[in-house]
Image (cartoon, rainbow, N blue to C red; front, side, top):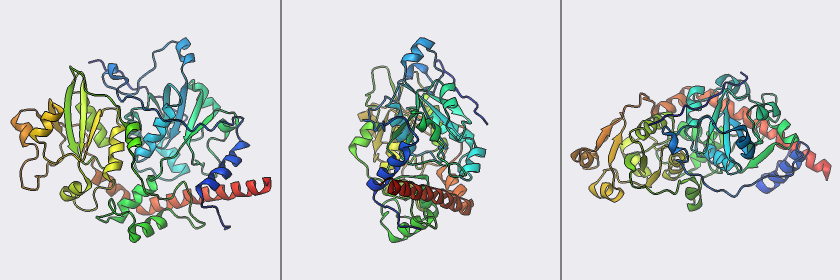
Length: 434
C-alpha cells in the first residue's frame, strides 16, 4: 500500500445590547461593509464530500498537491485557519462548508505560543492539534504554525483564492479583527457557525461533573454554571455563549460519505463511546484503517445510557448525536451505527458482513450479564487488539481541564469581554449610520 506523506509547512513563527440573532447579524454585516470590497457573504448550500476521495493515496491523509501550475489555476483553492483546540463537530462543520466553496482546502493551525498570547493556554498541544485537523476528511493540506492574523501575503503564499471563516469574530490580543485585511480586499467568505457546541460549552460540561448533563441540559444547575463560565462582566456574547445542539437528519447526511461497501473491501468493525473525539481515537482509527488495502471502517457508537453504565461519573460528555457527527467527520471512518449493541453479536456481524473486529488497549468492560462483549468475534477468530501507541483517554482530557480550571475560566471571560466590546462598537456604528 502506497503512503503519501502529509504536507505540512512551518509558518511565521454597559449599555443595553441586542440579544436577537437577526439584529446582531444586521449590525455585524453593516460593520463589515467598510472592510470589504466584496458584497458576497456566501452562505453555501452544503454538499458533502466522500470520506475516501483520496483512497488511492492509501494512508488517506492530507497530501501534497501534485498537479501542474496550469491545473492549479483551474482549482479554487481555499484557506481556513484557527486554533482548533478541542476539535469538535463545529470545527468539522466549518471545514465542510468551506470545502463546498471550492476544490482544495488548506487549513492553517496556530502554535501554542500564538494561542497563549492572544487567547490563553490551549487544552491540546500543537502537535496534537495538527494531527486532529489532518484527520478531518474535508482537509486536503495543513500548514503548521500558521500566523494568527490572516493576511494577503499568506493567501498568496499558498495560492489561495480566498479564506473562509465562521460568522463569529476572531480578535487579536489588542481587540483587532484578525481577518480585517482580507475582508477589505474582497478575499474573505463566510459560513455559518454550528449552533449548540463550543469549546466553552464542552469545558463547562467537564467542570460541572454531573451524571445527567448529556441528557438534561435544561437542568438549572447546568444552565447557571455555564452562564457563569461563559459570561464576562458586561453581558453575554452570542459567539461564546452556550446553546443546545439539535440533531437533524440533514446534518447527518451532510457529514456521511454516502458510500456502500464494494466487492473487495475489507469490512472492519470497531465499537465504543468515542466521547470528546480526540487524538487517541484518531491514532487508533488510523491504525485500523491501515490493516487492509481497501478498508471500510464501521464504528458502532453506544447510546448515552450504555456509556454511563460502564464508564460511570458524568460520562459521556457528548451525547450520542454529537458523537455521531464527530466520528463521521474522521477520514478513516466509512459508516457509523448509532446506538450499537454493547455485545458484538452474530446478527450484527452477519448483517454488516464484517471481516474483522478491532478494539484498542483500553479495558473491555463485561456486558450486563457479565459476559465478554467480544465473545462472538473471538469465536470466529476475527478479533484483533490494536496498540496505536497512544494511551490518551477522555479521562485524561477531563483531568487537563480540571487541573487548569481557573486559567480556562479566565481565558473565556477575557475572550467574551473583547467580543462584547466589538458588539458595542458595531451597535454605535449602525446607530450613527441611521
